[in-house]
Each structure stands twice: as C-alpha cells, then as structure tokens.
Length: 293
Image (cartoon, rainbow, N blue to C red; front, side):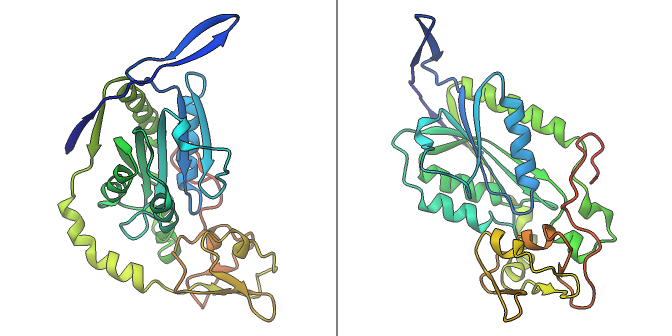
C-alpha cells in the first residue's frame, strides 16, 4: 500500500452553559462526519445507514445520498467523510464517478473512509476511486469492500442462492470497520491507497463486455400498471414513455444498475423477453440471519 502522512491542525470551540468546550484537538479528531453515498438498488444505502447508526451518539453524523445533496451541505465544513457506492462491472458506478469528477478541489485535506458494495469482488474499484479523491484533497485512510446480494446475478441466475445473499456477519464487519475509521481519524492522518489487485486482470473480459454489451431490459405489459416509478427514479434518466405509456429504455445510456427492475412494484421488468421476474432484491434484508426477508 502507498502511505503518506498528512498533518491536520484543527481546533473548534463551542459555547455551552456559558463555558467554552473544546470539540476538536489539533490532531483533527473527527466528531462531525458526512456520509455520502450513491445506491443503485439499496445495498449501498443499507450499509451507509448502518454506518450512520454506529456513529450516532458519539459523533455528529449526516447521512445523504448524492442524488439528494442540497446546496445547504458543504463538504469542506466536515471533519471527515464516508463515501459509499456500488461496483458495476469492476468499476465505481457512473453517478459517483460523475459526482467526484465535477467536485471542486477542497482547500484543506479531509480524511475519508471509502466503501463499495459488490456481488462477488470489487477488483480495483476502490483504488480507482481513492486516486480520484486524492486529486480533490480527500485523503483515503480506510477502504472496504462489502459483498452484497448481486443485482445482476439474481436476475440472470435466480436459482443460485448465492446471488440473493449478503456475506456472513456483514453487520459485525461494518461495526468493526467504523471503529477502525474513528481510531484512524484520531491519529495523525496517513493516506492508504489500495494496492493494484493482480487477480483483477482475469476479470477484464467481463469488465469490457459488461460495460458495452449488457442485455436490454424488457417490459412485460401484462404486469405493468403504468406507474412511471422506473422512469422517475432512473439515476441517469434513460427511460421515457412509448405511445401507450409503457417504459421505453435507451440501452446505450443505461448504466445497468437495474434499480428500475428491482424496485418495480409489479415485477413487470426483466432481462428476459419470455418471462417476468420471480425474485428481486426489493424485499428487505435481515441483518441477523444474512438472508433476504
């Protein structure tokens, strides 16, 4: 791993009952944390929410999706960041890439905990994103990958149970990682860029063809109720209406997050023309058992 020591000198004072309370030491102890995330079907949101609950009480934490980020929130006002996103075809999801690339560089460095959710493995996704963050003066001090139910696997091979399960003891893993993050925030900040993973080379064919030749999305009109939720909630607005009001997909603009399929209330969308879906990831998840509800 590549290490670089970054020094932080930050003292904040607050007034309480007429006295002055020291909230942050000169080492940059983080008590004001912004949790930013982009979630396709809900896995990343689930983990981000878990992190938020772990931080509550001992820290002042703010949880917000980049899709709902308002001008009232200024990243530079926070002491540290948590940024989460899904891995799609061995790369960070398009919306989070666009978000980070359009960000202005921060004047002062901020330590960050990066995490990604993935179906099997994340390859070099975290390394790619950590290097982009570095250019914006966000210093990665911790990065983690969480294996969650596969948004594409469950659609293509629903009989394989592995696609509908998260990794075992995911809740405990997240709890431990939050503790590590807080501890590192309280120490002199050391940049920790993930190493290049050699095994990711084996995934290059999947990455290449997955990004360019993903299957189209079909509408099963006998199940569609014309609610428009797929079109409204598409993160890249690649869905419009045909003459009858049914969803019409622009496959070239689609980022293959499959939010539309998994959140369709009538399971009217699928990757197969012959039959509608029997199973999606929109049924909730039981932290204690590791199974979908």
